[in-house]
Length: 95
Image 1 (tube, rainbow, N blue to C red):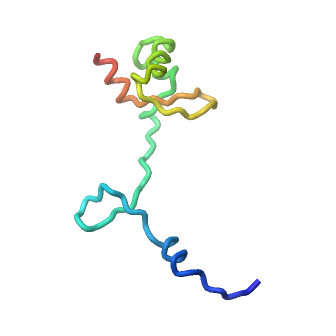
Image 2: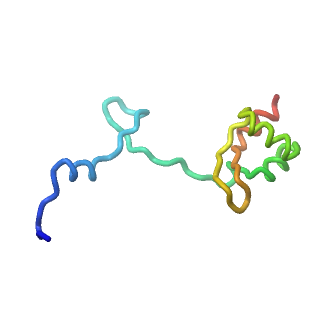
Image 3: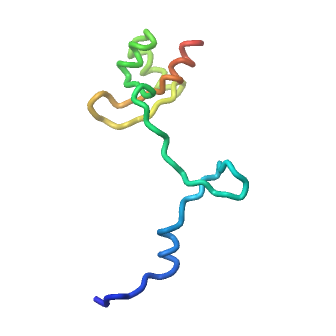
C-alpha cells in the first residue's frame, strides 16, 4: 500500500462539513442538527400509558392500529414494542 497518499479534496471536505439544518435560527447561518434530548418520563410503554390514561391496553392497541394515536415502534424488546408520548396521551384524554 502506498503511504502518505492524500485523500481527495471532496472526501476531506465532506467529512469535516457540518450538516445544515433547515430551521436555522439566524438568517444566512446553517445550524447543526442535534438529536432531541431523551427525557425518560416523556415516552411511555403501552402498560405505562394504560395506567396513565386509565384506558385498557386493548383500547390503546386499537388506537395504535388505526393510527389515531401516534407512537414510536421500537421493535420487539423488553418493556414492550411501543413508546407513546405523554403529550399525545394527554391529547386523547381531552377528547
